[in-house]
Length: 125
Image (cartoon, rainbow, N blue to C red; front, side, top):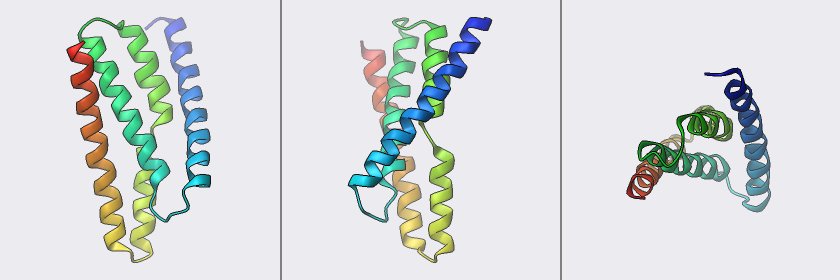
């Protein structure tokens, strides 16, 4: 990895985290619910884009360097599986076992499905 790609990777990670912060705040302000919709939407959309990017990279429509900057950098900063884990643990601590199970499983299943769909679309182009 060249120093330029490394710097772009770091910058993209910061931009991804900033976009996540903005999207999270917007969703939380407009969806008053106890379910972690913001985290779920962020992780599912990030997984979809990462799957698409991976498919495009496999088919050589996107360079490896660009894939690293966007996939590892931007999407690494954008997605937040650690927050999803934290929110699930908080539900468990509150004794909300059903909600924690649904929250954790729904987010995981939707994220994996979105990644598969994105990969399929990207590889089909």
